[in-house]
Image (cartoon, rainbow, N blue to C red; front, side, top):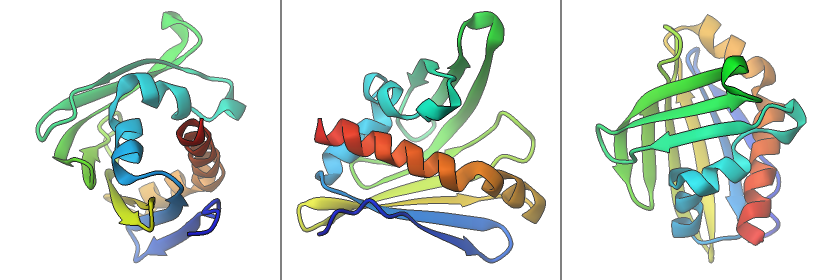
Length: 155
């Protein structure tokens, strides 16, 4: 399977972007890291930003909701919220990003590949401008997040 540390980024049309990476862990373990709050809190916030994930509420089922709160304390925090459109353990998650009016719909797929997992992170935005704005810092941030996820899975 190889090391799998390289992320392949792709812009698709005017509204979409995708990132693909291999992880040396089985799909159920990778899926769990995306759906269990205690695990998600260990890897989701890029450490270089210095803003920890301080709260994580996830009702991972079709129609369920999530709330992720970043910040040093309650007075200086920002929340990301949405709902799950699909939850198919351990193969697929689809959720909305509702903290702004131009949030994406995110789809993450987990495909078994030779004892590891091929993960595809895909976002569809309502406008090209929203996609381009999200892309501005995403490649570095997502690469760091995925490296942190890899560390968690290997640990």
